[in-house]
Image 1 (tube, rainbow, N blue to C red):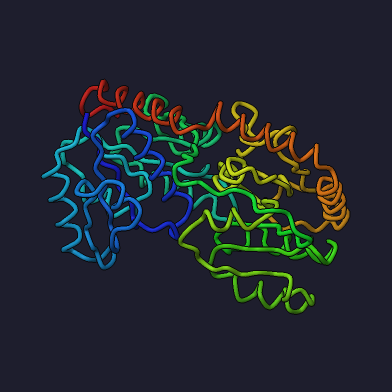
Image 2: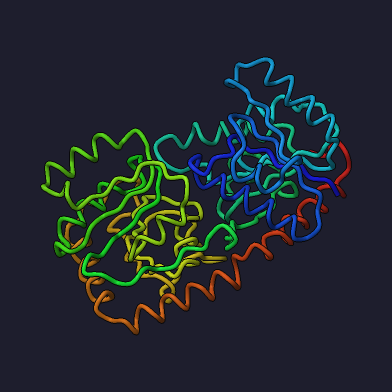
Length: 374
């Protein structure tokens, strides 16, 4: 079997979907599958170093770049894969392969009906799945919505949860100091909960600091907010970082405050690195009953006062979280138990070996479908 994985950019800064694609490639290589990658924008990075000549750069200037479309289509023809998997790609990369022989697999990274733009997301999902032979959903609820709201036939939807590959995660916790870092690796947008994190920090003892890795449109407003609250010296803004290992090595706790999360890749990475996960549990499939990432044993996540897509307005909820974090920080045995439970949970359910086998099964099942199936 020959597989092509399509990725927008070979850059860790492009977010969690990049790391999903990287784990897919590493997992398939271990199984002896011939894997090529096509990168839409920019130069080679970690994927290029991993695959060498099997990583192909389109160097498109934008989605309007006609030459980029031509190069993309030509590459697919030359490689002639059995399966082309759009794991972390731009929509134009999928669109310009219409009519070519490889079976096409799309990746849905969140449930469609989330947030104030739910109707738009549902319509968008319907459009982007046109012409696909299979859709991979990263949660059971995302799969249900693809079927029930987007009209995708059930036989074309497969659930494959994200996974962690410890080959790119080698971070280890540094020796404890008086300063305690609550870390977040996020795209700095409103729904990732950075404003709630700043509010929480204002309630924490002064030796606690907030370290945020990532960039986004909400950054200027949140920097101003931290200054208004007199917390500028206790909030560390790292911006987009190239090496996620450095971030995990620097923090004492991973702070999860997202209003919604389809999987929680950074949470799983923190668990793998032995970083205790703390925060507020809102909406999303990170704790879906069929196959949860977080449980009461492997994390310290208190329920938000509301599952609405909005910031936490109940100060008592934040105070309760503050008290729970302080108590966990005092109790070494409780930390050790949580860390060990988290590592075991990831190894048993979200390992790259498990992921590779699931992906391979999806590819094989797709190849068995009649051509033109819909």
